[in-house]
Length: 194
Image (cartoon, rainbow, N blue to C red):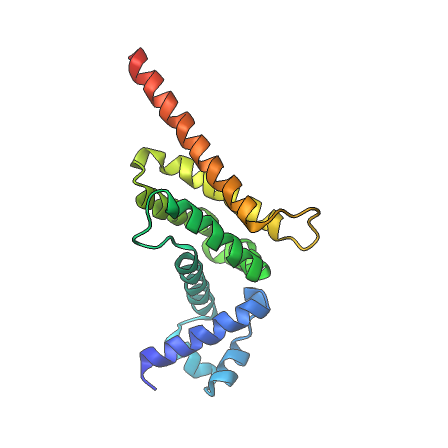
């Protein structure tokens, strides 16, 4: 196996195991054993346990971003709907995984700002897909936090009176439109006053 193939294999095993347990419970010995290599050889590909954990979390983060991204050719109207629906579906399928990835203690220790970075990447994707100016990225960033919170509440198995995914998507998209309208109105008011 080439070094790049072996590295990919080890990350894949780490990702699969991350779905089953928090990152801090991910056993280097178990990953190495499943790959059919020694623990020492794993450290040939990743210089430390922390570096392996960080690489697994980065790969998981890239997977979430890829899974939730709007289609490259999505219209400005369709892109937020695609993002929200895909995000809700991702959280519904892998709620515990997402919580462990973004809020787990090892994730915080490895990358303290991982939540902000993930939301900012979501915001930049949405801003680009809807043609929003750079000045709206903080607003869209805050909206992604809102969508995340709604998704975690909506996907909670104990949540009473859960609405349909279509209703939740419509609510979140309407919230973005309302926020953008307020910002546009404030900008217009400011330019008229100046």
